Length: 100
Image (cartoon, rainbow, N blue to C red; front, top):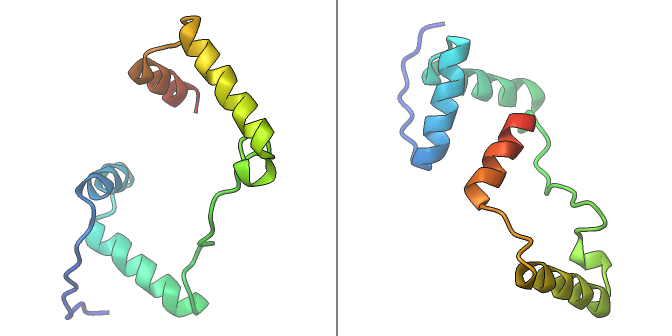
């Protein structure tokens, strides 16, 4: 099918860059990926993936905690900082990315 329409969109530059890196590895141009997405919307009658908020584990979900439980966890965190139980955020994220 011939492509004859232009779509101009504004996107977050970081998101675009990361998507381009993935698409490049797949050998798919951005325009083809967008075309695939739009075709899937037409075929499925909606967005072709679930659009939901991620589920937080119960131990992290403050909606399920009492005020006392939240305060206890915050106090535990403050105590860790006072005791020097901290790590460099950049190093922690780098380590996380290696294992995930």
